[in-house]
Image 1 (cartoon, rainbow, N blue to C red):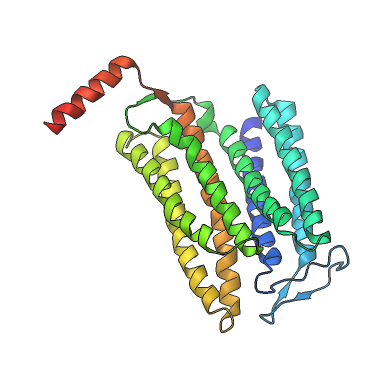
Image 2: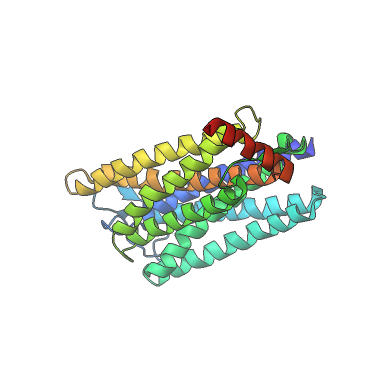
Length: 301
């Protein structure tokens, strides 16, 4: 019972963190003058933007404060009930990330959004979200049921793709943040948008082809492929909206925020798939490798 409530609470923290990512995306994008960072002087005042709407810088800080408190409670809860030492360390790491995120957030505003600090702030937020999602996975009943070991017989190996995919997605997130904060142009992010989905597609297809009925790998692969499809679509729409920003500024704001949030979901989904692959997929033995090679040769003939 304690475990199920901890799992539900971990899901709550993850959802609140996603809301924080949404709030951050709505108030830190300065490329089109969407917000005016006057922290800590706003004290709840409405900050106007170019669309004629309003953005609440204080709202972002309030959500961040709530998430910080929820994270501390989560870490304490984990330390109290968890027997797994690595889970207790993960809870401590989550607190460290939220503290670092708060420091970077304050530095971002006080220093008038210097690109390196702003990019680090954006990337750390996405990493923290992935950590909260991972905690939710580790506290789930399905995780406690144990792994379903299978052997990897493809190339490149799924275990290597499990490491590569989240890293590439995080780099792509950094490139997007760098563009939004004017560290560099759009081209690096566009190139990444063409390459990273291919790696994701490769990993997802490999999983579905090799283990189409696996109870953990299949849902994780489908989730990652589905979210990536939405993310690519939103990226195209956000680019079109940016081109027409002066005519339809609100559309640019909404699509950019959605694109940033879905980027966080993509990273989290890749982390979940990586966790499931590292847990369930075993490096193939020599006998299994020889059998697979023989089968491939027979098919080729």
